Each structure stands twice: as structure tokens, then as C-alpha cells.
Amino acid sequence: MTSSSFVWPVRVYIEDTDAGGIVFYANYLRFMERARTEFIRSLGFPRLETVDLDAQFVVHSLALQYHSPARLDDEVAVSANIVKLGRTYMEFEQNITRGDEAELLVSGRVKVACIDKVSFKPRPIPGDLALALQKGINV
Image (cartoon, rainbow, N blue to C red; front, side, top):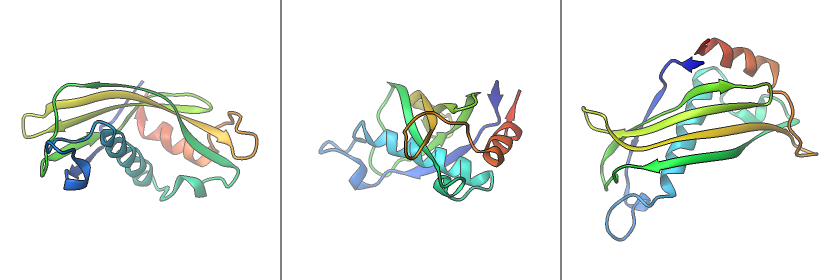
């Protein structure tokens, strides 16, 4: 299963960097979170927590590989593509690139689970969102 490419631009600001002027490693996770959020917004869901008041979305697991650093004032492109859609989760492949030649800076996979807000147990992704996600990917 592959999805059409969703890309969100991010400018690197001083608060994103360490003392050496390169992006602090954990901030790449923030960039990826923004891209996933904007991808869902592009499907017509401005805030995931309003899709179903009993559902919550949490990062279940992730794996990242750092290839090259981003630096202060860089403009990077952050992709968010669903590569696997389960009944209770969505798995994203995400890349962060820089420049016209799309220099790969960070690559990763992030699994986002849908859970019940009270029990914290897995639950199905709400119907309207599940349908939109299925339409947004190529099976």
C-alpha cells in the first residue's frame, strides 16, 4: 500500500537548533508530527481529537535514521505518507529533505494507534476518518 505524497515545508528557526546551529535531533520528531497533522487536516479533519470524542491518537512506535543535519534557516520538506492502514492504526513513512535536489536528512516510520480515551486500549479508527484515509492512499 502506498500513498500519494504529502509534503509540508518547515523553516528551521533558532529554537530548533543546538549550540552548534544544527537541528537538535528530537526536533525532527516535531517536524514530522506537524506534517502528519497537516496531512490529516488536508483530508478535512482540522483536529483529530474532534473526530470522535472517545478516541485518542498516540504514537505507538517509531524508527528514525539520521543522514545529514539541517541547519539554522534551512527550509526543509517533510513528507507524511501512509504505507499501512490497519483497523486500529496507521503507519507513516516520513522523510525530511533539503533543497532542490531533495537531499535526504532524516528518514523514518511512525506507527500511530487509535485508542479509547478511558481504557487506553486499541479501538477502530473512526469511520469518517478511516474512509478519508482509504481514499487518500493508493491500494
